[in-house]
Length: 160
View 1 (cartoon, rainbow, N blue to C red):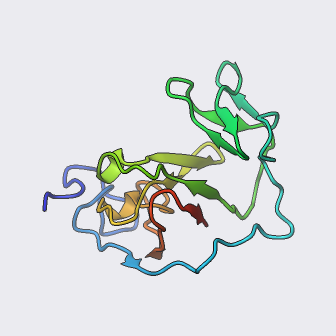
View 2 (view 1 turned 135 degrees about the vertical axis):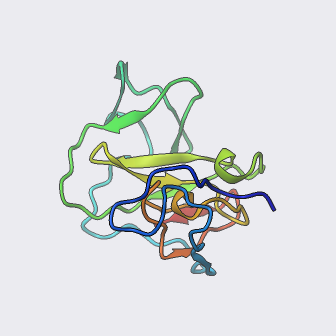
């Protein structure tokens, strides 16, 4: 197997690991619950399944596709940002990667959610898809791996 990660990146502060260190231990793979979890009762939904009125693009309106209760990036349209501003919060995220598997490692269903415009929570098809530990699904990208890898198969809804 090819080396998954790097050995020429900066050291993480107060850590023995480099960013995307291929030597960093992988999270334990666990079987997710039979059904995806519901959002917490006090959650503020940033997407209602019908339109992108709560979102904006870099140069105006968000141009992602909304269909069947989900939003999907349209290639070339760039990132979108929620109109709502959050401070100290708990995030609940639901997503599905394409059911047809294309690519490997970071080239497979790669996306992310930025918290406070700074910390990226990794969204990736992490099911049976080796990559560096701090780049796997639910990691704080480039900094902290998740406690476990509980990814479902491609095409199934993921929740964390």
